[in-house]
Length: 190
Image 1: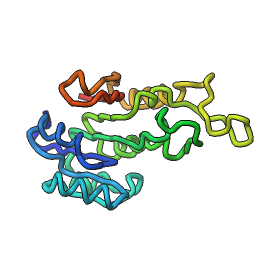
Image 2: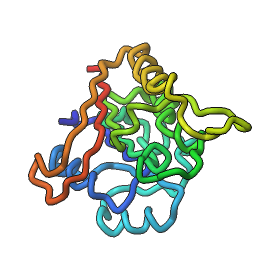
Image 3: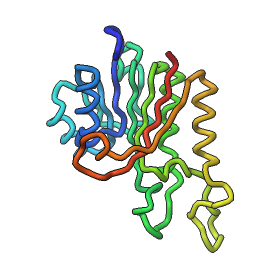
Image 4: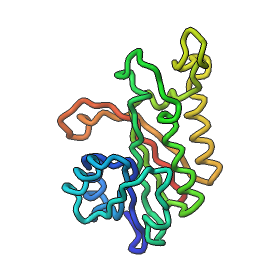
């Protein structure tokens, strides 16, 4: 639950399915949502009209402005999973998009969310350095360094005194009519 003076924020908002769950859990809609994509923001605003919407790059949006100066009790992030997913197949990986989860750290430094939750594909747990350009396997994850970035991400959260846990869950095990499997990470400093 959120405390009465806390806000809730969603980064990388989409149509808003996760936000339905957030609304049910918190008994109120997220206070603010951001996405650089106008189409996603429009769809989110239709499904969640009571949420303030910010059409901005998540790296450029001001945490203090989005929260109206209130500490976020919840920061929910669903960063682009395309460049972690096995569904991407043999296409090149994009390092910049693979590191979008790091947007949590400016938020921690500026407004210190009490809880940070991240949802992504299971392959996110294997987030590690890519082979360099010019290598025969350029833009593929170096198997000898699997989890290096994921572990560093979790350790960095812990360095800010967050307790970090993560699980791989299947939606159908929780009454949702899909077999989608996702990684859920929760970092709490309460």
